Length: 107
Image (cartoon, rainbow, N blue to C red; front, top):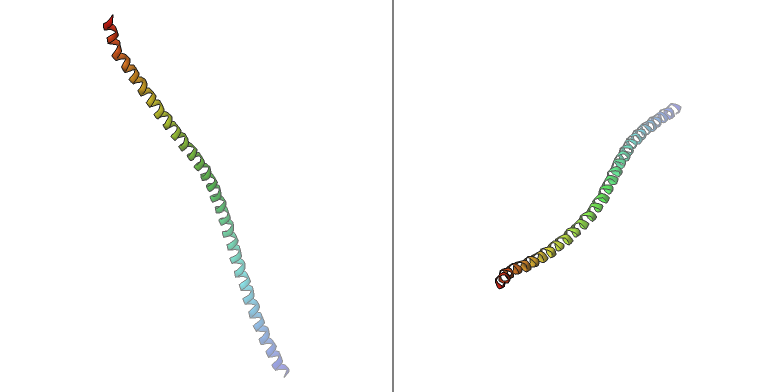
């Protein structure tokens, strides 16, 4: 009986050893996956920070573009006002030119 018990104990020991080896391999594999995931997480976080910075920059530029657009609109309105006034002044001056020969003819 002793011999049989020793053989069974050795078989159980072999099974235990196989399980330990498999568990160790699984732990190694999981650690590699964890390390890879941590590296990818770090890279993703860096990319996210870059994108946030870019978004902030674009928001700032959008504000500048909006401000410039408003300024352009104002300048165009001013330009149109100036054109109208210059046109009226030219019309007035043209009217003066028409009256000048008549004034000379009266003298």
